[in-house]
Length: 446
Image (cartoon, rainbow, N blue to C red; front, side):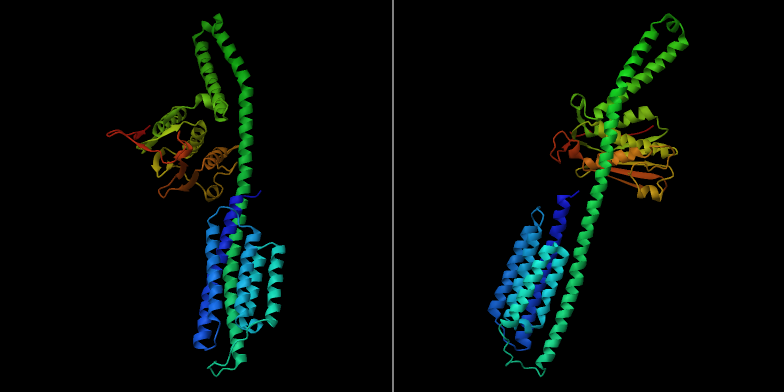
């Protein structure tokens, strides 16, 4: 699997490294020209060499503009960038002694960068062009005028020192830039590995959703049959005259109604009746109603619920998000000793729901594998799917979930979801303040 945004990000970072290297080359050329011209008193063609430096600066500005585009920087573009640097180096060497210039070995830097950044074919192009330029400079160049050289240093010693400086410069640049390029490549590989893992998890979610939807359809018929049978039993004299049996029939019908509601909820979550059942509400009301339904069905011993949302944001209620939050609430309830706390607030354009409990907290292994399927400290097969589904639902909607342990003991789970994922109007930031004196803040302890 290939992710275009990941490839584009990595290739743009590599191009930025080439841009940075070119700025170093520009500064180095200006410094070297100043030293040779002013200190060593060796005349150089300043105008021509200065024009090459200006061309390099212009190329850098164009390359910076190219980095602003989201499109992937291709192998051909990177090869062209390196060939431009080879051409600029060749012209500067031609104007300053050709192959006798100790900085001739800087061609190796371009070859090394090509080997790291480019495909084998493009790298060999850099090698061929650099070698050809080297051969040409052995025969065609402007020799340096050493007549004005004012130092009592033999030319051979000067050349040797220049080669040493070139070696230091090339070594430092190779270590610096090749290390950063490898870091970019490792970051890209890590991102691709993460995307592959995400694809596997999302495929797992899809299979579970298909299984749940299919099971809901299959359960519809037997549940309807049981409802008919129970209704017939209620009208039979032997059941109708026995108060104890009537009470048991009532309990059975209530349980059956609960099963049918769960099946309907699965179908709604699968999208089969979403259009009919979706309703407009406010974010604060949605949370209040959701926590109320969870409290009625789970009956927690003590619940501290705080709704700190004081903005009236219209949303379309979504049972999938509700079920994801229910899974987190259920985990907190199972882990708690006495109390579960739920706090909701709006931070910027995001809804933040913080769920805490006073239980033993997460183990280091649980935090390491948080949100992966079948990773649970609770006994029994198939456990650990609740948090896995919550993580995937939030991630698909652009949100995130984080877990940790509280300093005073117990676990903490924070869910962050962009409000635009729920809002009726998809545009972000559609927050409408309350009229004066009103608020949706709610707090209760059950």
